[in-house]
Length: 244
Image (tube, rainbow, N blue to C red; front, top):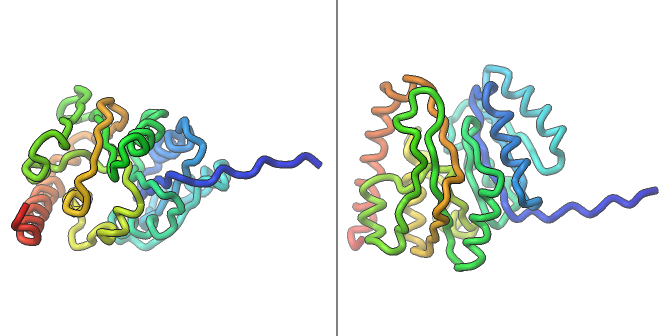
């Protein structure tokens, strides 16, 4: 009987909330499973989908076992879903990816290498908007925030989208994961709280994360709610950290 090789221990956990993303979730899953590192697991939390996402996720999980698992919850929103995924994550490094976005094949390898080389707690990269209605599709590499007034830059705007960073699990645990007080902007809230906890960040100046826009749907009442939630996040951070 042929001996099977031992599974590679998980170092990176990717947490993905999914709500009615059937047209896109296969691409998102495959971009994680196709990463150039073999020590990556994917935890997808189905957030009460009513389309074909649930069945598709189970088909994909069977194809990628044991590196992919699917969890389910009633519709609660993306941040409770991410917190649920975090509770099941086995890696010491954490990435987040939405079910309609994707990463370059070497994204996690390069971000993890940057963390190892610098002993930073957060590694981040550039990104590009894609899809119909994207407000500009020019690839964007953010500044080296560590060389700037980081607090001022972070308070000006969310420094990077949720899938353009890799974070040490210990740092996320230290700040308690995602707040669930708002339906949006809680990724921005997490980056601010992580900055208050650790100033050890490192940039990988390459575009490796891709954010999908969906026509005019994002320029709507929901978009204005996101703006208001982001303003609340800034206000709450300044109130909690007046010395910053």
